[in-house]
Length: 170
Image (cartoon, rainbow, N blue to C red; front, top):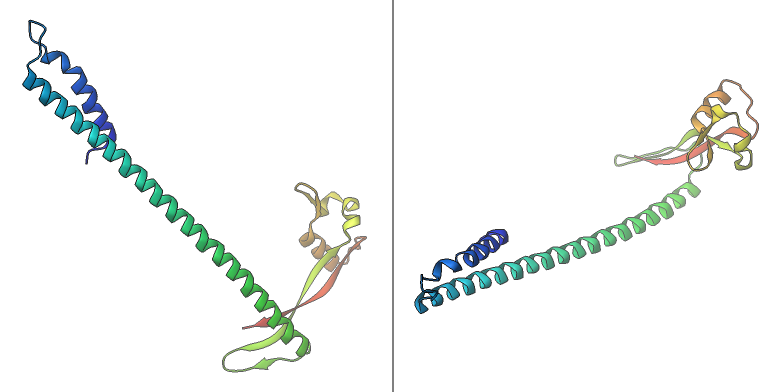
């Protein structure tokens, strides 16, 4: 099937050629008029079919889009459920495993990993020197810079480095 613009172009050309059907007496041969009308009808049918097919294609795209959104929503819910299960089971292991205990097996290793996280009193962030602040839509503490300076022995009011334990299952 021809593209819609080609069908429309053919209709315009056919309308423009109508004057050619008129003879020098201002009359139109009935056979020519029948042929002309058939051509117009065929082009109109082609145009209608093209528009309907395009509309049906759009409907199928919208159905596929909805189906894809449904799959995405299902996957998001599944990820949330899996996150809850992981947390619940990790919490169960964490409550049973002492900080210095390591469990080895051929399939996995369970241990605690110690890291340092920097905490800053939210009420004191605005009083931190500019070096320790970043402005997004609100003032936030620059935790990495604060952590490094505390490690170097610089006293920062309202900030401290604290031990953070994270359960690692490898």
